[in-house]
Image (cartoon, rainbow, N blue to C red):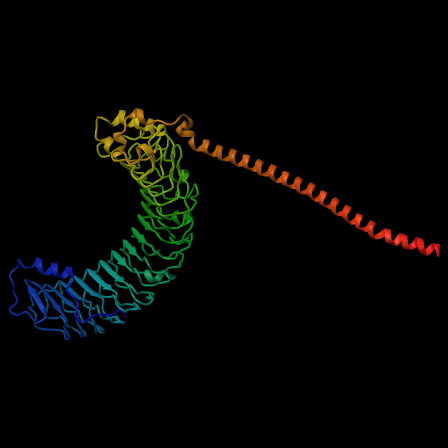
Length: 539
């Protein structure tokens, strides 16, 4: 249970509701204490009992930081009420049919209260209700039939239960006209019974993020034939079962899987979604995308692959099956290079984002095929140079935006062709500004901090020992590293051999000296013994 203070400030939302009705003439003769009334809007704070003498013409009634129970037919006199809010209070009990006899009530908000149980009859009599918000209460169970009388409900938010929310068969009975259902932050853990979602015949958007989901059973969404958006973000799904979307969700257009440790693209599961247009795989620990990963979703238009830190190459083959793709997100990965023809079949692509990566090189033909690109984001990478004419495949217009900022540019001969080409083609239009204006040199030292535009073309030069074609720079660097490694290895081997030979020679000489010393000592001891032997023989 969250701690609450007795005196809570009126929220900005309700202040806005109050102010926006000031222009309406008041029809209420008396405004209760602890309340503010204006026109058809009434806002009450810190009530300990439910007042009964508001104007019958009240259309919008809001209680904050109040402490009372709600009995049956509590609002039966408010026949004009369209919006009722009871929030940030100590409401612990709501009786059956508490909101009945409010024939035009359209929006009911019960949020940040302390009731733990809502019986099946609480919402009876609210057939005209279209929006219901149950946010951050202590409810841990949705009994069957709880929403049985809400045939007109189109939008429901049931989020932030402090304990694991228990769903059962027919929990959503009666919601055949519901279009949006949000069940975020309810610690569901698993979804293992498709009948839980039975009866949601017109549901188009199902939002269930932050639920610690570890498993979803096959066919879980089989009753949701009208579903267009499914949000499974911020859960603990390590994989998606191949039949999770069985027998198929042909109308699903948006699938959000961000921040699940999937490791791989769930190819077989995606094959059940032929109409998918938006796929969010941000931060799913994907490192390698198989060539056939997206063949089952040919109509995809947007894909987010940001924040997959193990991805170090562009999945060219897989992406080139997506001929209708318009937006591609590849930022915050470990991509190091854009190879030639990396996006050759993506002629519909208009937005490409590759920033905050390890990108060091771009092939001169890397952007071939991107005829309709409008936004190209290559900022915050490790680019030091760019080949001349790299932007030639792009149809540059006044709306084209190219961002190359925050790269460690080396303003030398490696960049000269790029500068020449850009100034030649864009100098007479505003496109030059979008491509190069404001770019700063990181090296050489004499140009550090200077703008590209402030340096004459002829000054983009290299020392004689530094010349190398831009396309072969990485290969030359690699060859040099290999040569240095070989040389160092040979030198180390020779030194170790010499040390070994010297050590052997010194050891042999030492042994010889020791042997000679021992022999001499033996001889000195042997001489007296021989003399004594001779005397003994003579005797």
